[in-house]
Image (cartoon, rainbow, N blue to C red):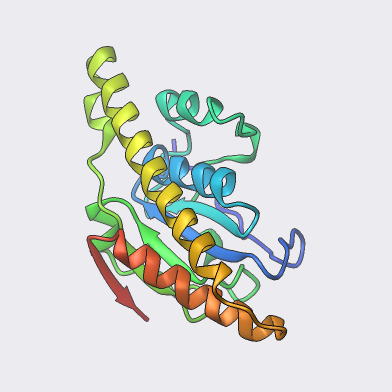
Length: 196
């Protein structure tokens, strides 16, 4: 079942202006991208706001993904499987980075999202490919979740360490430096990147 298309309006729900904004993409927006969204928002130390979407969303979140996300204490009612077109209009959030987590989405032409964002690829095997066996599915989702959690924790640790060395009284200058650091660190964990 395809998800109903709606347009995200950043003027309706505006996250703190100083947060770094990340959009995580995959094909179905039911597992990897949803997990990454929840992890960035949970582990982002209040400095990152993440969203997720898919090129061909399934319209539902995989129950194994939901189980892993629930283990974070994350409010799962905030999550939904949605089209990447949700964010392809002028009033959408202005992203600092767009991360693809599957090869299919990485190979597709992304819509034109607002802002001067960098496309970074964090390729991961599809855990939903193992749904025929509950044991294999659980192992695959555990592996996906743990890999993303380790990467995102490392990104946040490096951001925190490098941010401590950046002292600026100018908030705009500090935001630009943080964005540059974030992109550099995300690239260090990437398998491929393409800046727009």
